[in-house]
Every structure is written in structure tokens, then in C-alpha cells.
Length: 550
Image 1 (cartoon, rainbow, N blue to C red):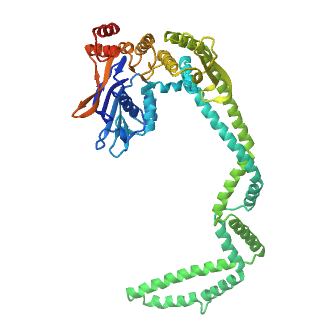
Image 2: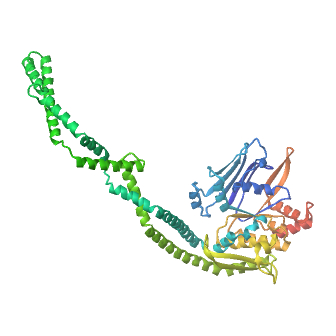
Image 3: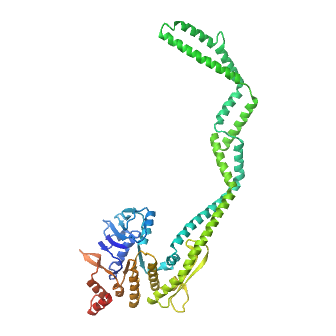
């Protein structure tokens, strides 16, 4: 419920701070006194777009702040979804800056207008004759029927199944398109994969093959150089090893004379050992080396295959070719197994379809049971509101597909006159009739679910005194389970309120300002007397006002 409202620097309001109670709250005031300003401020709290022209003083910011007690509203999931801190006393604040920019806050957390609207519509319902058009909307009509049919849990389950069902249908369509496209490319992809598999590629073998090719291709030259090198090293008379052996012998004789000679001797000895090792390795290489034309041809052929594949796939390494091979293998495998995947997807869709059928049938049966009760209650309430011949014909027809809320198409038909033809609400009901129908629906809904605070804006326009008395009684009954506001010009309704506020204008320092004040019991008598007989309050008007209040 709305517990407090603060408005600063908005339209004709300089500063206003007012608290509200439970029950039925009446708001009265002369035409032009500023009731629409109050509604405009509340609309900003609910997420309406801000307009700098509504700011009273453009040099200051405009602030509208509303406090709601939401303990009974079961809104924790909404706060979690919107990533907001949940507080049972929730404060919504809207600011319009002198620059024209606006800001919104929920419990001091900045939010966008979408979040404000999502929460706002769960907290406050501002209802006017213009908004009775909502009655003609299929979604609203279904919401009424489903609330009475207690379909909330079933609809949540159905919605979850439908979301999954639609997702699988999209995946199936994508798979079928993929299959058609893949089949066109399958032959070529299979050819590429087969080509890579036949190449029997091994990671790192390109460098090994290139080295082996160079060796085999230049075997005679290499063999000649190795033989010559062996001769240079190992000749008994003039070979490098023999000469260094002599050098070693000379230095061995003087190595004991000084550390410098001994150091050179050790280095000569070390070089001789290294050269002996080099000589042995060259001998081994020479022994192992032999011409092998067949192997050379094999290596050359493999290198050509690899280089052709590198060029074809525009890569530079065998590792990249192996990666391409894995990818092709996956694509070919998936293509060849798409029928199996599609079949499994179709089975899943069929299973979901069966579950949706069961759930939608359950929803339909609940609706079918409750519709006669809804019609009976509506017609009964409307009879008391001066529409004794009002009749409804609510029909559920099977849909060809799964809709967002089941498999029903709804016809909400109405006839206002005895013997009249049933027709759509928007074609057969006047504005005043729609207002009374909406009041009847809201009063019924209030018995089945926790409704947000509702504010009726002159919903009684054009109705007689007796009918307005009935409307006020309905509002009183609604206010026992929810907070109800009504802006009215009718004394019969004003007298039924638990609390009564008056909107009025007054000039302060030559500036017209809109004020809102709660009326005392005596002030209420005067206000209702003025509503009955005008500004000149007569004794009879006072007596009538007291009678209405009692």
C-alpha cells in the first residue's frame, strides 16, 4: 500500500508531504484544483516519461517520492530479477533536474524506467474511464479468468514448457537447414578429409623430412667431404691429430716449469681429446652414409604431398593441417549423423508437445469451470449498478497452435440491453458501462488475489446518485482487503470513505499553489455539503451531509 507521498517543485505544487492509511481514501476538489497534478506525480513514480515543462521552478530539481508497504505483495522475486535490495518499506524516488534529465531510484539504487514500470505496475493501479479500454484486451480478459481459475502455477509450468518447445523447434529448423547445406558440401569435405588422412601426417615431421632430403640428395658431396675431413684429422704423418700429438709432447716437457706452460698443455690435451671425438663421429657418419635413391624418392614424394596440402589450405605447418583434419572430421561426422541428431530432437519435441497438451488441457478445464461463475458474479454486480439487463457470453475456442497462455482463443461478448445481440465489448458497451464493468471485475478479483493499490479517477462520471451509492459500497468492500483511492465529484461516494482529502488552490505571496489536506470530521461535513448544494452551505445541506456520513 501507498503510505507516504512527497512532491517538491512539481507543476503548481511547491512542497507537499502526505501520509495515507488503509481502507477507502476519498479525494475531492473543484475542477481545476489540481487533482490531475497529483495523478501526474504518481504516474512519474510509476515510470512515465518526465517533461521539464511540468517543473515549477526550472532552476531547481523536482522530486517525487512515494513510500510503499509491500510486505503482502510477494515481490522478492521481482527485486531479485531486477537486482534490487528488497525492503518491506520500499521507497521510489523520481527526480527531474534543471537540465531536463530525469533520474529514478528504488531504495536509493539508480534504476532505468523499465525497472520502474515493472515494479510500479505491481504497486499502484491508476484507473480512469480512458483505461477501461484495457477491458477489451484479450490478455487482460485471460488474466481475469485465470486469476479466478487459479491457473497461476499451471501457467508458469506451461510457459516454461512452451519456451523449451519453441527453442527446440528453432534448433530443429537450424539442423534441417544445416543438413541441406552440409549435404551439398559433404562430398568435397569428405574428399579433403580423405586426402589429409592418406597423407598420414605426423606433427614435426616436415623439418625431419627436409633434413633427410637434403642429406640423401647430396650424399656424394657429403661423403667426399667426410672422407677428406677424416684424412685431415687422422693421417699418421701430417694429420691434425698427429701434429697436435707432437705439440702435446713438446709442451709436456715444459709444463712443469710454470703454471702458464701447464695451462697451455692442458688446453692442448683438451683439444686433442675433442678432436679424437670429432674424428670418431665423422668416421661413424661416413660408415652410415650411403646412397639410397628409393628412399630419396619416397622422401621427395612425401614432401611434395605436404607442400601441396600446405598450399591448398593456405597454412604453414603440419600442426595446422592436423587441426584442419580434426575440424573436417567433426564436420563430416556431424553431417553423416545429422539424421540421428534430428531424430532425437524430433523425439524431444514430440515429448514436450505431449506435456504441453496435458498442461493446456488442465488450464482449459479450469477456465471452463470458472467462466459461468464469473458471468454470474459480473451480471449480479452490474444489476446493482443500474445495468439489470447486462449479459455476458464468454466462449473458449480451441486454437490451432500453442499460444503464450494455452490453446484457447477467447470471445468476451457483451449485451447491455434485453434481447440485444451479443457483441465485442468495445463495440457494445459505452464508456460509462465499461467503467462499471471494470469496477465489477476489480471487485471480483480482489476476492481471489492480492491486488495493488487502486486509484479510481472519476470512474463515477455520468452515474446517478443511487448508482454512485452502490459503486461506493463496492469500493468499501474492496478496501477491506486492499487500499483503494477514489477521486470523485459525488457526495454519495465521498461520504463512504475512511479518510477524506481535499485538493485546493491558494495564493501564497501572489503565487498560486495546489495544496492537499486531510479533512477533519467537521471539515468533511462542510465539504460534502458543498458538493451537495454549492459554496453557499445551507442548513439542509449540512443535515444531508451528516445523514450521508452516518
